[in-house]
Every structure is written in structure tokens, then in C-alpha cells.
Amino acid sequence: MAVTSQPGPYAPSDDFQTGLCDITSDCGTCFKALCCLPCMICSIGSDMGECCCFAYSFPIRSVYRTRYNINGSMCSDAIAYCCCPICATCQLKRDIDLRKEQGIF
Image (cartoon, rainbow, N blue to C red):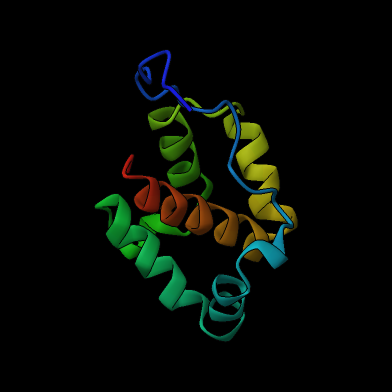
């Protein structure tokens, strides 16, 4: 099969790569969060170059969304963290890990 066009620059998606409750896409991340949420939070903080204390709050999610042009608002981030903090934390970590694998983090 012949290549007829060159790949273009990376176009960021307009949403997270996995759903908020998409537990089955990465069971290891969810298990780690359930067993040791502070470890997961520090891992996100380290990935984002932030303090562990700042990593467990909705503003870090907003910073991440802004960096990668992901749809949402601070209000939606706050609701996600208030309703299901473990799911919101896992979703953020899954997206970070996927972007690392894709070489776009």
C-alpha cells in the first residue's frame, strides 16, 4: 500500500482519551488508586511538575485540560472531583500515561 499523504502535526483531542468511569481500560491504575490514593496523587504531581498537595484538586485537572485543549470547565472539574474523586484522579492519570506512550506529554 502506497502512502499518498504525509502525516500532519499532532491535533489534540477535544476530550479525555478515556471516560471518567472507564475502569476496565487500565485496571492497574484503578487498583493503585484504590490501594494507595496518596501514591497516585504524588505520581500525578510528579508528572505535572507540581507539589503532591496541589495534585489532588480540581485545579490540576483544569491546568491539564488547558495544556492539551480538552473540553470542560473548572465547574465540571470540581463536580468530577466532588462526585467521584477516585474516578477523576484515575482518568487524569490514564490520560497522562496514554500521552506519554504517544510521545505527546
